[in-house]
Length: 355
Image (tube, rainbow, N blue to C red):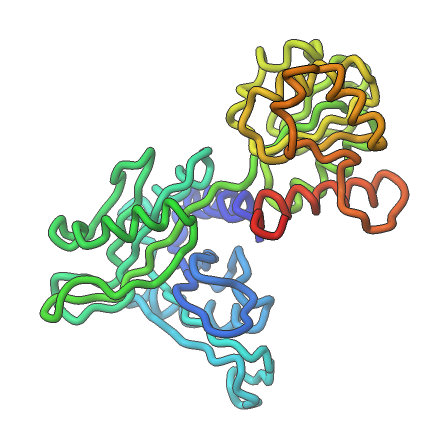
């Protein structure tokens, strides 16, 4: 499941005014398919978009969603996947993990909030927060009440102001580490379990060069739900290539890419024009960005030559230019090279601690 697929499903189903349930992982133990913050949408007829368990639990969640829609009452359910119990949902999954999942009703009469606001966030360029009350020990904290931020400010909230004040430190910490987690908040007389989830938009990448080998890079990135822009200075490449799914496709001189794309909004770039002067122009402009990953096709000698040609500007690229781009997986041909490039980008952008 990708964020793009979840958003698309929501747009279709909400236009049809279908009742929906949002299922969110709020806590896990051991080995699990998803971690806290993962989401799926379920309709009243048990159709769903998203995957929380690799297919083990989705059917049971879909059935539970019916009751949530009928009653309007949220459910918190625990699945102990480590139990070797064939009677448990008819499965003996043996995954040795535990998942806690929260199901909350999304009422068409309330504009599907809070997910309606979450969609705005997930389609933006900034990490935001969704804080959802899972369990409560008092009437002040209402299960399923949620606070969502947009541009760093509260854009939707049905959590009381007094209760929301308890969340400020957790929101600040989550924005910093971008890790969703469950928290016990409040005091002895007014406490609750609240999931503070980081709503992290998918990576936004730019492919500079539209040769045949750029097409599989685009396909793999789209499969991951990433947002992709393609640019080249050769109109023939763009006209004959298949770049369906790219957010934008531009024909622009190599030394003017910043005129059609705000480079500071991208998380990564792959330079693959196979043209020395063009790649030099691309790198010169990318040097002034904060991108953590800049991939460059070609052998190490080519990378060294380009960086030397850029003089002082080349120093700004130190540690960020991956050339030859891609992990060493032993593959040959456009598809294998594209796979290695996207895998390296994924490691850098999604799991930076391992890079």
